Each structure stands twice: as C-alpha cells, then as structure tokens.
Image (tube, rainbow, N blue to C red; front, side, top):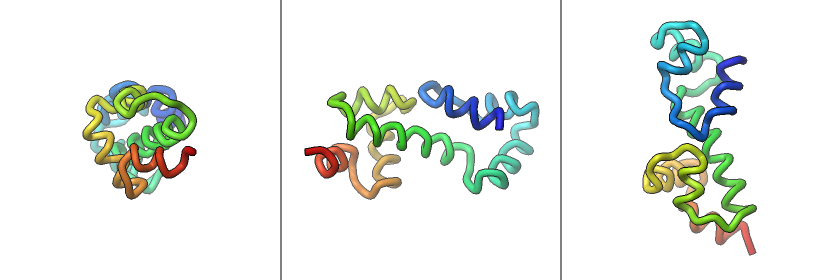
Length: 102
C-alpha cells in the first residue's frame, strides 16, 4: 500500500523500479514479481496507467498544450507520451481532446 501511495504521489517525477523496491524494502527482482502479483500489471505499465489517466483529465478539462500535459504527467518525451496514450485510448491525445471537448 505504501508503494502505491508513493507512486500516486510522485507520478509526475521519474520513478524507477529500484526506487519503488527501496520504498518497499525489497530487492528489485522480488519487488517486480510481488508488484505484478498484487496489481495484475508490471511496474512500468502501472505507472503509465496513473500518468495517462491524469493526462486524460487534463486534456478534457484544460487548454494546456499536449507537450505541457505530457511533462506535467511525468513523461519526459511528448512523442513517447503520445505513443503510450494511443495504446491506452486508441487515438492520439489531440484526437482524444477533440472528441471529448466541444
């Protein structure tokens, strides 16, 4: 639970598997396996899920540009953000914004 709170609090920053394992007081290998059994997804996938869900809200409820949203949600590269976002929502962030905002 402490690690999940850590991720939710710090998702805007770079979070590594090693950092999360340290917070859980586990080795990186044991933590990775334990985390997947607990959440049903890998560490990076979980962090990206938190990030794209926040980005979704910002796309709908703000007029910030896509790159600013990407960086605000913890992605260091707006192209990578667009790729990850498209995997989750089936379209680019720009298309998503146009679809859900009028």
